[in-house]
Length: 337
Image (tube, rainbow, N blue to C red; front, top):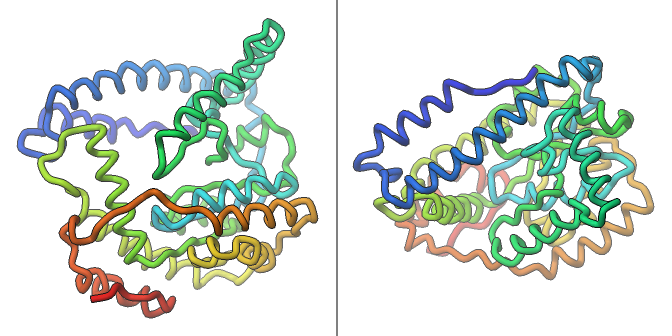
């Protein structure tokens, strides 16, 4: 079922336009410009998306008969390696299907997807292939986004997807950290779903998330204080550790696996082998070769994302106390006092 959170949109607009005085989302010339630009893009795109979804009901109603075969959900707190793992597993085309970013943003419907492929085909004939343009845009982003790179063709998070591509023997791969506090909801919709929970030392993941969101917020607005999202992220992160772990640990062993971020980065091949073995997924020789290469890349990767707890106004003792249970259960190292 397609769903548009109209109430959420109206609530956002009410706060953004009429209840912003003295807040960190206060209305400034920059903020107003961002909102107007976003509206100019969002509403036309939203109209086209819903037009496509509506046409699906008329032209391709058979998509409703498609069921997702044991979807695999990658979850975890933000900045815990979920994107890296998803892009890695997406290379295993023998086992997984997943949506691409461009499909989510512009063509979630079967109709629009077929239209895009039709236009791309014409473009190739006349010498203007759309796919090449997309790759060029990606390269521009690659040079400027060092914290969380976005690719229009990167794998992201639909019965429509399976209907369009036709191969229903593969697992549907979905990654969304926001699913972490919604595991029971997912199980209600997909009782046989499998979960991969990425867990990173909260003393690293939480400050990294705060830093990322502060950077995004300063691009989109003019907050009164730096790291204004700090307290909210610390509080929500605690729930995103505690709740999913409690639910997943009650599931059968072949339905959920917990992987440490450090294990994934230091030896991606071993971490993926553990995931496949525990979830009962076969590992092909072709993907083993891919894993070997990606493991070396992961070990050699150096993050350009730097942040300071002191600058954020966070005391190490506060973080250790807040996440003591997780730190102890997974033998994470505490910060030096």
